[in-house]
Length: 76
Image 1 (cartoon, rainbow, N blue to C red):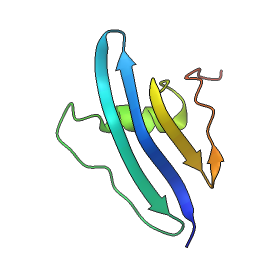
Image 2: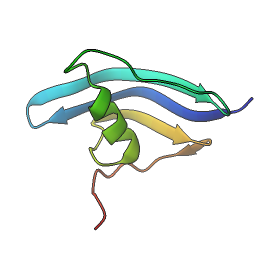
Image 3: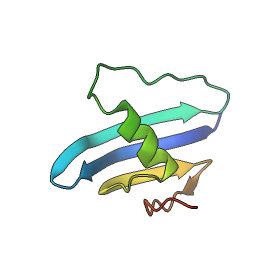
Image 4: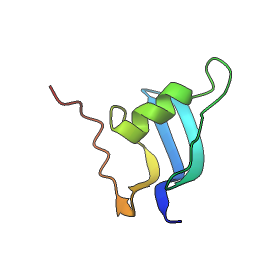
């Protein structure tokens, strides 16, 4: 199976507050995955970085083998 989503060492901040620090995961094509954790663990921030709502300050995201350009800008 090929990699569907690859996240390598992503970090993200809200101003001076670092919300994510070096998060990595791989999801294969056809695989079902869940993101679990307590309040404040970074679940929403991780999904927001993947979708481009929040810019990653470090790391790389690949979707279907192509590097994502995470600008952090929402589209209206």
